[in-house]
Every structure is written in structure tokens, then in C-alpha cells.
Length: 144
Image (cartoon, rainbow, N blue to C red; front, top):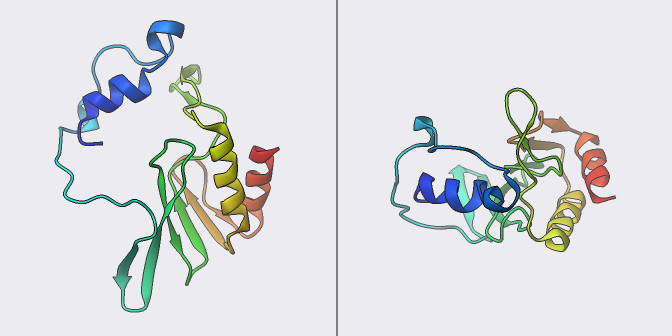
């Protein structure tokens, strides 16, 4: 997390040598510069956003062993980065990198965990915001 070059080499290009999947060259300039992390979350922490409004940090492995999400119990909302079996496409819709779930059973248990949460809204990094039952249908589809 501290160094975009490490993320690029070890995470995004982990199948490059063996399968030719990944990115060529160096990380884009907008990937940022190496930055020191002052503290880490592991899951279970609460972050006070405002008076009476707290977010719970959830440990949701599957995408990676350390993957995290945020749960807002007061608003019945979850903020997740990614859950998808499709991989990451380029702008021209060809596959840039494959699905990056190394731990399938753990990933599926994480989806089941989200399915059991009382949610009215699910905010994701790769899907439109889902409200009501929309997120449950997507989660069930991904589990089956």
C-alpha cells in the first residue's frame, strides 16, 4: 500500500510472466508517489465521523487477505471497494488483468456476510450505488 510500484509489480502483474496478463511499463503518474502509512486498520475499529455517526471497519478478505470495508449501521449502508468475478478491463473493454481473488472460499463467505447485513445502500468502487434489494440480487448472483 505504501508504494505504487510494489502494488503494480506484485498485485496487478502477478500473472504477467506466466500468462501475459497485466500492464506494461511503469505505473501511471496519477498512481501517486510512495507514502508512509501512519496507522493501519485490521477490522473491528470504529471511526467517529460526526456526533452520533460512526463507521465500523470490517475485515472482508477474499479480494486480498487484508481487504477492508466500512459499515454505517445508522444509515444501513456499506462502503466496499470491489466485489466482482469479471476482472479489470481496459478502456477498449479487453481484459487488462484477470480477477484478483486468490482465496475463493473466503471471498464467498465475505459475500454471504454482506448478504446478511441489514443494508439499504451499498456503495462500491466498480458498480453503481445499489439501494434496497438491488445489492442482495447482485450478491446472490456472485455467490451462485
